[in-house]
Length: 160
Image (tube, rainbow, N blue to C red; front, side, top):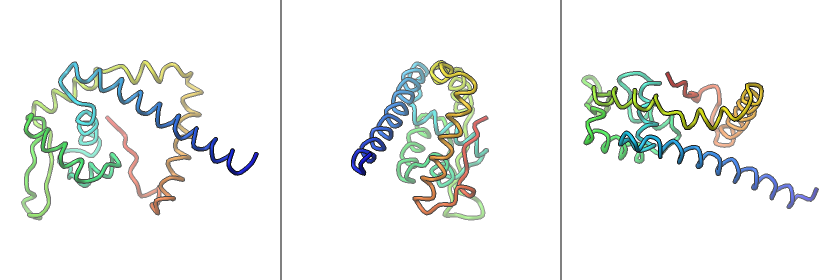
């Protein structure tokens, strides 16, 4: 195999991985819109639950691997929709804390009802899912190292 054909194979694999991610995200977004919740807001709800109330925008950004200004914009829209409350930290005035409101908790429970991801991923056997998880963790860890980050220090979201 020539270097160019190897590069093309790697690129094609990356495109396929990105394509699958986008397809699953769009299926999930379509499902969530039935509840009036955009996909990214659903992800933020999960992130806040994974971090715990209260969370900071920086924690949410790191967990979601999104730029802080993007998460800030989502949080502003979510606050206007009554899903979250942003408040200044009482001790550190320059720090913002984010908590789910009662409406946000209800939205989170609605988000949990979605089954699109489950239907898609369940097309793999249990052993295939374990193998895929292992492969994705290998790629995640190598990618983090490429970014100069220690995979042991970068939180892996465990949604509850």
